[in-house]
Amino acid sequence: MSTPTPNIEQHPDVATMRRRYDQIAETPVAQSADGLVFLSGLYVAMSPWVIGFTEHSSMTASNLFAGLAVALLGIGFAAVYGHMHGIAWVAPLLGVWVIVSPWVVDGGTPETAAIVSNVIAGAVIVLCALAMMSSGIRKMRS
Image (cartoon, rainbow, N blue to C red):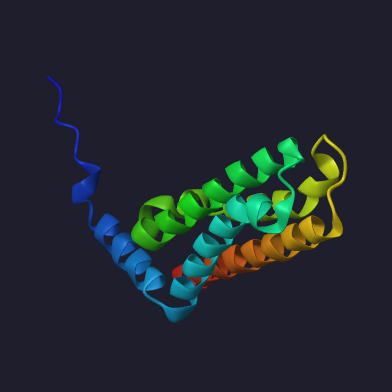
């Protein structure tokens, strides 16, 4: 005779955790960070055409994919932080990738404007993602 497996969704700790994640997502710091991560991701994705380094096809593809990934993470963090907090560490790594990619991606080093654009956008992504993560960690500890 087997006993029925309890549903985790009915556990009282789940409701408490969801309430905490909702509180984290509603803070002005988290909302600002989410928005800036999203906008920075969009900027990185379109920067090859804005700055004008589309002749570097590897760099263009890198920025497009990294930017779209960051933008999707920003939307996910803003919409359902409680479900996505486990992959919050990905956003700062993508920001670091955006910073170092002009020197790492094959196809020659792009112009100074492209490098400066990537470094600034990557730094914004890293800082905002770390701010978002730290507000979640502080809230969970208290």
